[in-house]
Image (tube, rainbow, N blue to C red):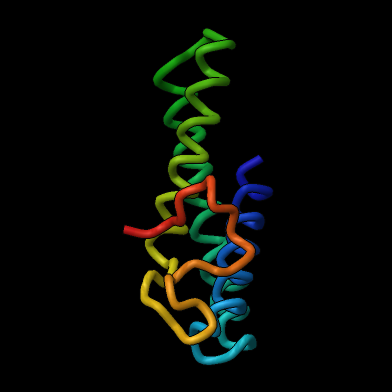
Length: 108
C-alpha cells in the first residue's frame, strides 16, 4: 500500500512539473522522483503505517480509518512541499490545467 501511494504521488508530482514546465528538464526531474522521492516517501509512509498500527492495536475499523487518513495526509504534505506554487508561463496560477477545480491544489 505504501509503495503504491509513493509511486502515485511521484507520478502526480512529475506530471504537474511537466505540465507547468518546472525544473531543469524531464530527465533530471524523473531522476529525482525515481531515486530520491519514491524511496524517501515509501520509508516515511511505512513508518507512519507502523506507528498507527502500534498506537491503535487491535481495533480493525478504527485502525483502517486512521491508517487511510494518516497515509493520505502524509502523501499530501510531501507533495505540497515539492509542488511548485509560483506561476509559470504554461500555468499562470501555479496549477496545471488538468487539475480538477473541486480539489484544492497542494502547496502552502
